[in-house]
Image 1 (cartoon, one colour):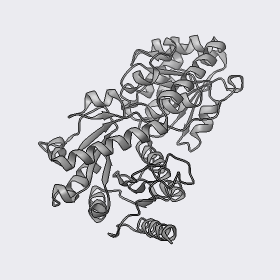
Image 2 (cartoon, one colour; image 1 turned 30 degrees about the vertical axis):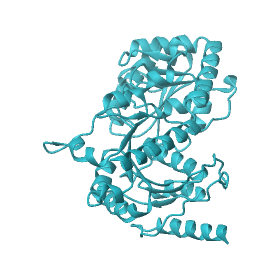
Image 3 (cartoon, one colour; image 1 turned 60 degrees about the vertical axis):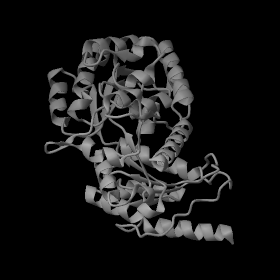
Length: 395
């Protein structure tokens, strides 16, 4: 009977997530010590009620981060609800894991959803500044004793912005109990103390290096800060087009037309493919011969991390979060940020040395499995939640 009741409460909680706003009912904490959930996981002795919040109707790196973490936490026995993210792409994975979802494309929708669930959760984990603002505003009228702990995960190596002349940091500081940074680079850039919990991903199947194509892959949003232009110039400088290699640029954004003009100016039109938004990134990573990651400001670098998991040898800007990912690997995996000639030399050297490419791919995959696993991320996040809950209770 107890298990049936728990299933009923979890089903009711899931149903709440299908509307625009949640209703206030107790969340199912899960059965302590009952073992891992069907999706795998590590059973916990004290299940938490966790609310993730992101103001978004998209499905980019941060939304996928939230999806992976929420699924893992649910598999560990926690009760989890996610606010935000593109419903058609978030819900299948969340539903499968027993995680409820509430859409929130605007900050006011985050505020309303958090306010509606605040009495039912132990911790609110916000992602990006708009969610920080929405959650803190939603809880502002609650006493500290009556509100959940608020943990802000910082994904970008920069401070929060401003609302007119007022720094957002000043608006949210008193309502946030703890911060998590996805890398040391992020921790050094943001305001206030934080705990570093590296992004983790599941392992990928090993790929035989001999089956990889003569393709250099750049997979990223085509935004100015990503410096895709440096990658295009690096491919030109490498001379690999003349040796039968192609450059595949996977991604969308406002830089598409300027980049197409640059490709034409460099005489690379026959060797560069703009493949747009792709839903099959794992397949691209398993086929490509090299990854080129020129962005100098990644908080960590999810595409680079996924490439490492796939055993795809990388050539990446030696800056920000990339430094932590690539530490200890072949020096040809890194180039001075913003220097297309240096990047081109790295590409040329690795392209000419199949054995070195294979060795770099193996080493990168081993590093991901050892230091950037989803299991380690979930454990570190849970520890940060526990510390925040304890800290809130002492204030």
